[in-house]
Image 1: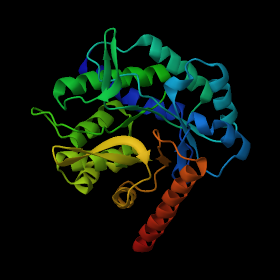
Image 2: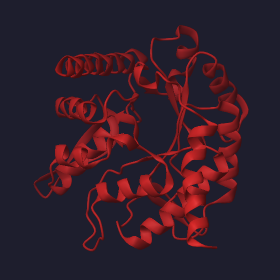
Image 3: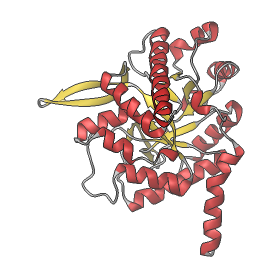
Length: 307
């Protein structure tokens, strides 16, 4: 294959996902969404609370049945996004083809607004762990991740979003920073980025870097969605470690960082995540409303500054 042919194929792959599944023109104006969790499904179906969209964990719906039927009912009222936790895009061997086929069937049926996965790995051959493990920001890791993201996008026939990780340790030897790695990944594959503000806050605290500097190093044109959540603090040998549990309201510093994110990325669809100690539905709806208030104020300020 010649270099010109390879460049043409790469360019086509970057364009096709957006051409096949264009996003709504007013996507940025959606009100904030909430993560769809089992304790709230019946209440959401009955009450239809005012939120912009719902995000479902993809793997929870692979089995079909009652859960999938309810997801399709909700799809009649709300836009749906699908957020995966198990494809293990950073694994050193090939992707799990059964998992990919199941995701393809779900995506075709639900027709979600976004499909997302993590910058992580969690499986190798027949071994899998119930966690999102970090990858080193090296040339070898980028090559693997690019190949797997391309395979995922080619299989689904659409753009996917990759979420930044939460970090507790840093690799000693890397070729790039995390932000450089994410920008390169998006550039080489045409994927989008899902920026988790809580993950940035957690990682910056744990590893001792500046969260705002991190945000500003991400190319805004790649960012398609934002996640917000609350962390848990654990103390180890007298040092406070922030743990990405999604088990609390967004902290004040999280909201401040969210404003900075909106100023840098522009008006971006935003989701409230809550996965442990799940509260009443009204608590999630109130968090989403707070995000909308901040988005509206930030957008108005930006427009006034350019007037």
